[in-house]
Image (cartoon, rainbow, N blue to C red; front, top):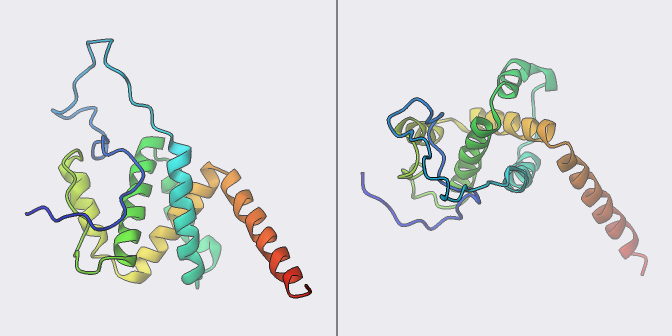
Length: 172
């Protein structure tokens, strides 16, 4: 595989994650030198970016299925660790950006820092039909809203603010 230049917006997340988990793979190395700085990841900030983009996507593709129809899939997402869910959210976000933007890129590019299994899963996202990708995106969106309840409040406040602006601006 050849690397392509990246002409799309990258996910605002670090690419230091493994695939599913690097704990039991050959790439796992315990940190022996205590002077090595530990990179902290602001999951909330990154997740907010994912939530906002998925929220826009949801308005373009409103759900045709009843809310309870995906409860099994959504229950599985609740069992993921924060790192596992963050990786999934990042991959769905990256695929969404790819689908919205550069259609010449057939799938998400391979990331050197990712586990090969994760890179394969990222590429497999491109093969999902639009309806299945919508369902996955919606499931990730609802799980983000469940894990970060303040995100929905932010959307409601912004919606009320923009509604009040538009409803009063014509009177001037």
